[in-house]
Length: 477
Image 1: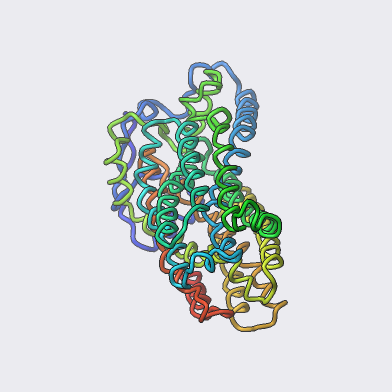
Image 2: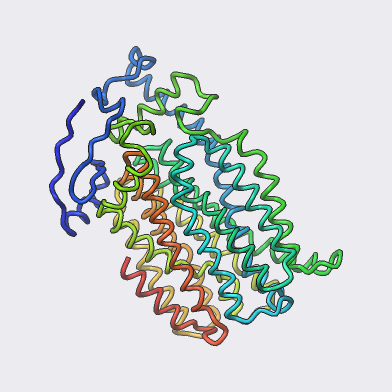
């Protein structure tokens, strides 16, 4: 077996330096010790080509790789964007429902509404690590994502039938519990197809689904609120949940047909394409990206993840970003403080998300092109600090809306690059990556529980405490 030199112990400065070196060397270190992995790849030189590639020149392999990436991109990326659009619509339509009259009909207090928002993240946190490890074991993302999407779509639709606060809490908790399977699972899924230098852009493309949902949510909500209120004796906010949940279930039927599984389990790839898909990841990291060895068993992967200091550094970074970005959970309500009517408020939530989509994709593309992460995280977050301060320091409508325009774009511009850093820094073994992605995402989303209680009627329109907290968390990150 090829020997891997032990890594020296790292202190805080060494860790930061290691994270910032464009992840040129991958490690499965935990507590300063690099764990070797018994795999097929580790028994031979990583530059040794698989059998069906040995007779091809480098130019022919590069051309075959371009065709493979193009084929995977076309099958995978549009579908994961669409799934994430529905994931975010079903999760974040509650502020629009509140604007459309849900709170008045159910008799919700401000505190009860905030609890209904935050309880989703309790379920969301609980399911992430088990879900990712289960996804790794079954090796069938197409089947797994199909099933969980059908379930969360049904729960979202059922929210339109709730009659009281308790029913709303139950639907929100189980919605979060099931939806938790998708985003960390998809981050893990992408890292099983793409190399480290390809991940930032693909992660941004995935996350653009949430930003697009933010843009279209206002338009959809405005249309439903204006056109369906009272139709068939059903309130507009109920139609919002019913229709969006129904569309989610419908889309789920097409997932298992369209998206690939993992490189070794995708049947519509040729054997040569499967070997190339596996080998290029092996060549990128230095070992095979596939479960089956002793080192890739569930509890071994968990132990490696939770004993690696780099996971905790990345966890702090991502958690601070998510805490700052939790404003998106209340964005229609925050925009409502500008003083416009229901329809105008919902329409005004669209432009900030359009700008955010452009900024996030552009920033991630440039990060991949330059092979640099640090400044692509720090610069957008610095802009978000200015936006939060401006929004809280003035009541001028134009100035506050300009600040709101830049909030999602700047926060998520840095957040997406931070997410791609996880897979690049903690790549192998595969169960370690799955556990780290889920754990970081779970802990970071815990911040959405307590930040929900900062958006109270009494703190509007400035939301001073929330703005102060966002500035502090952003500076910390």
